[in-house]
Length: 66
Image (cartoon, rainbow, N blue to C red):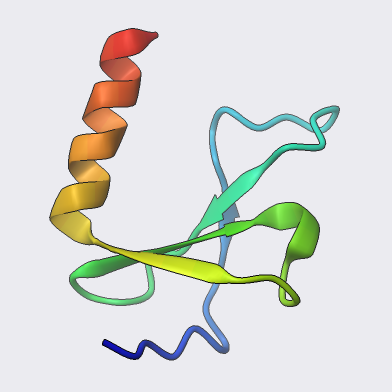
């Protein structure tokens, strides 16, 4: 599946802070999928695109470990 991520609005993970060099950004702009990228490479690096259900499951698992 090819997904166009140009022009999407991105937001940093709530686990990121201004002092951290390791930040993950996600976009809510595409139905059914969640694009994810490294904020240090914003615009120049790769974007991983996950099915929304898989991303939701991942987030639930991460929160359960916290």
